[in-house]
Image 1 (cartoon, helix red, strand yellow):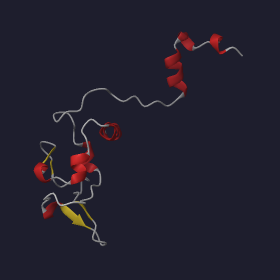
Image 2 (cartoon, rainbow, N blue to C red; image 1 turned 90 degrees about the horizontal axis):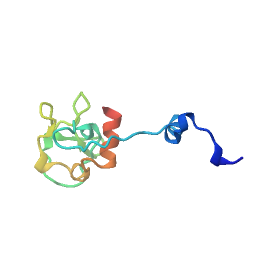
Image 3 (cartoon, rainbow, N blue to C red; image 1 turned 60 degrees about the horizontal axis):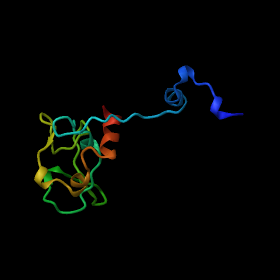
Length: 114
């Protein structure tokens, strides 16, 4: 079989491939503070170093592990619900500091939640 003569609907190979392969299209819109919608703030965040997170925002489980407290809505207790910004930004956990806005992980969370 000569693959150079395969017929694709409307001679559009890309559309044909997308129709048979489940391709996730990632938007190219830049994520900024004004449009981020804090999708990462519903992830579980372990407190693994002392950055000064206020104790009222820390949950300690029965094994002594510390995570950021999440409220009944599933979002981090330090998230300001009106501005969707971190109320303890200067003292946020190390993991939050390393989670880069606009990174693959950030975009993936946005796709799952929005």
